[in-house]
Length: 329
Image (cartoon, rainbow, N blue to C red; front, side):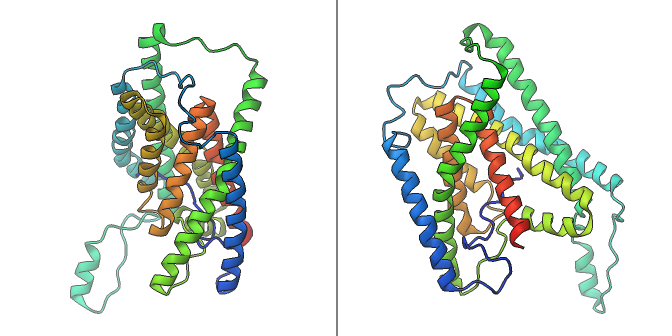
């Protein structure tokens, strides 16, 4: 239900601009490159005690002044609000779309024609993008309202933030988010590359060029309707990161750590569920990459104590995939 990141431009990790140009040698070369980058990243993260076991112990945890049910409620409410918004969003999308809501079916076999009419009509590009935008706007607004309500209710127990200038905050948030992406990307890519190569070896089929359906839709939209392509890009760069980080990092991760008092466990469990939530949009071989990415988001959240930094990291990851998609296809 939650639209997501476009993990790994070419799901086998290669950077070939066209199908058919990949070769096993090319894939192995890219695998070696990403492996070397991942080892360097892991070495630095271990050296500076970012991912070392127990590194989150003994430090002041991220302030979570609200009850566990408040954080769990944010997680559950995200799906409830998206469900509530789905039908009005679809109705609005149908109203705005120039495409007819019914489909014309040409079949020589009467039985096949009857079966085909039972299938729901596929969403057009405009309908899909409209649904995304309406769902994101409604759900994010409602979740933000819940967070503000919690803040007003429990504000007396919340620690006062340190006084910092607006420029310092913006630079710090963006810098932490980008640095987190630089550190996580090689590890995410090597996991995705390895998974795709294993899947290709087992199924004897090449990995798809674009491993997320949103990227495929974006390319098609760019060729047919630039305005709606830009709107979809805005949804992926703004709507998805804000909604997903409110849902998973603020809500779910906050609930688990509040319940267990174990930051490492909360990061791992939230990352796993984050990856599984995208199972309908990406190949199975890519899901472990999304799990690692989700854990990276969780580590940055706990270390930086800033949801905005994680949103920047998430948006930058999506932007990297979008730019790479247009450059390589």
